[in-house]
Length: 389
Image 1 (cartoon, one colour):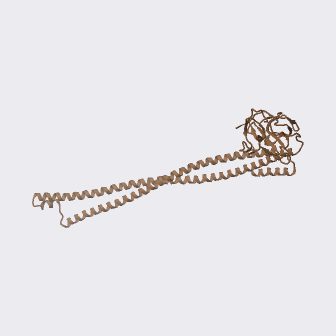
Image 2 (cartoon, one colour; image 1 turned 90 degrees about the vertical axis):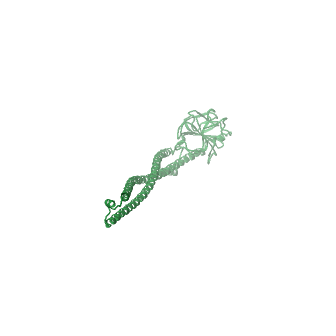
Image 3 (tube, one colour; image 1 turned 45 degrees about the vertical axis):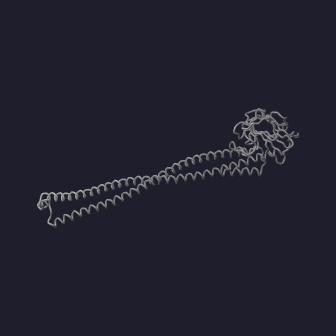
């Protein structure tokens, strides 16, 4: 696409070097440039839409990653807590095992001592008593010791069993949390891969966007160059002689009926309203639709024809270096060489050339031969009440 722009520049350069460019000679180049510029702008819009979609998707991925990382941190905290609890339970189990072992050893020591002492049974206690009271007392004492030993060992064994159960439950919870964390880690890794891919896509789209913007800028430069050639050609017409021999009186009448007084675009810099339109607006635009256009002062028509983006175009020489011009006309009422009077109908406004809709493009040139410059028409034109859109 950029190569094509360079080729067009080359063609224009050759034409300028070997021929005299006349009004409208660059129309085909401008039309082609405008078409290519519009295609590039369409591609740019498509790339920007893709980039916006990818950026929105990346934002969603980043939000999911942020949420997952928060969940993973919570799971890691929970795992750390579970590991601490499991470690504590294991220590409790080991303590209870030690306590149970001590109790068992104490009971064994007592039984061994009883065995070595010849053994003491309930019958020995009864027969060795001197009376019923002593016998009853000794019996209860032996029974209580045995019951306490048994109760204590049962308690220790039950506590150990409970701790082992709690530890098993913690191990189960730990396994479940680890499984969930593994799933979250896998999903997070998948999202981060998508994040990298989407960032790469956005980066590539940004590069493509820059290239298309550069291409559009080159098209706009080519269009501006062609429009400059048209302006130079307009000055060539001014410089060619054969203009009006009368004298400009100093005030231009409004070129329309006074009821048409809405200015839709002022003189000077502006945002181009459509592709190919000028951003440095050397005229004013008046909001009208297919109405008569009148000569703003006495003069002679020096141009009446098609002028590139201006469409049907009329230029009038008013003498003393003053010229008026009118673009986007739908019809001519005069031709080159026609001498006109103030208020005489010269054309009908329209929508030809590069235009967003029916309106009158109105220019004033001052300077005459050599270099005529465009000036703000409102500085020289009389109207009782203008409105601005």
